[in-house]
Length: 168
Image (cartoon, rainbow, N blue to C red):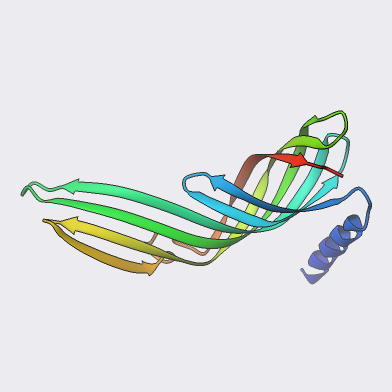
């Protein structure tokens, strides 16, 4: 296993030394089942005119707010607002497909699709419950059995688009 990791790291380091590889810092909003923001770095490694491999390392803030109302047979109504914020370190490995490039090369767009693995490093869930006019607030860790995130580990597929300005 150590040999595979060492070989992968050395391959990426040698490719970064190449003049065509681009390293970029990113900060962007994210929208999926929740709203959030991510910041980090990507390495764009061209494999042809139109295709590139784009690994990265990102910090993500995932935020989700849910409002619920339950109606019981005895006439009670319970309203809940559940607000979860969680921090993840994410490692995506994506295929970049160039969709557009301006004549002078200063503006380009690409579609990115691939896989990611993420680890939740922390987060809190705040719940406000109102029943018969009485408001109760609770706060707990966002990770664990029966909570918003059952596990700290997350993985899946990602699809996105990116616009690059002053691509020199």
